[in-house]
Length: 210
Image (cartoon, rainbow, N blue to C red):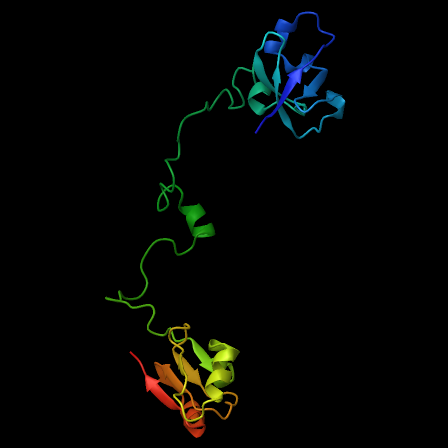
């Protein structure tokens, strides 16, 4: 975005020339006040200046460091494309054309195995059959708040808390760690043998879900 400034008195007599040439602007005044010379303006900023005849134009305090290649080659007949071969549109074909023909060396050297088939087609492939995130018993109570655990522990004869690990993004419960001496109902798709033994050992239950 351009910052809006208003041009003040300069050393240029004809203010109309400022319409097209920002290089003549030597002093600018911000709308908030205060005049600054171009040497005081950061080089990486652009400004929107207003000439005395109310013409807005953009200028930058940064100066170009070099000409573009197109500007350098103006006046040279071949423009960098040679006299003999001449510049043509797509002499070797567009894109990856010729990978098995006139570009075979490039494909064999830098892209081996690009062409051809390997193995057999697997119909109705399901890529998520082995997806089974797990959680251990020592992290089981982290799925509910500490206040929930304390409230249920105060009522040993009341209902046991239910922890659904599937809703938390886990499928299988593993048996690493210890559980507090508090009954709990755990819902999961899979339970390891040790996990089932430890859950039932504290008076809890394992419920399988689809």
